[in-house]
Length: 127
Image (cartoon, rainbow, N blue to C red; front, side, top):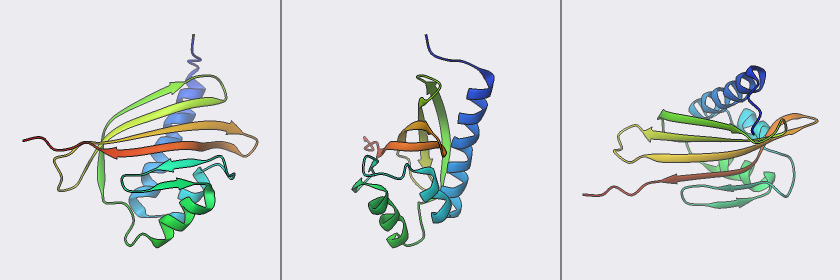
């Protein structure tokens, strides 16, 4: 039903790894380049709702120190076609017991694969 070519899986895995590396090093220029350049792009973060590439870029540049360091616990890559894929992560931030979740919808454009929708959330710690 879904495409499963090794080349597509390799490409999407490499993109996910590159995004995590850019996030960890707070490389805002590289992070900006992962997002689709249009008003359609949406990023819901832990504490913000961002619409359009400009809002996403402004948020990253205003964020002191970047994203807190994190470890990826699990990753799922679901290609829906040769041009659309969903990459989902579970992660844990350093010093936290909470589990974070990140979902990104990627589209294959003439400029390469870009994120068009992203959502990040942190699960509540239960006692």
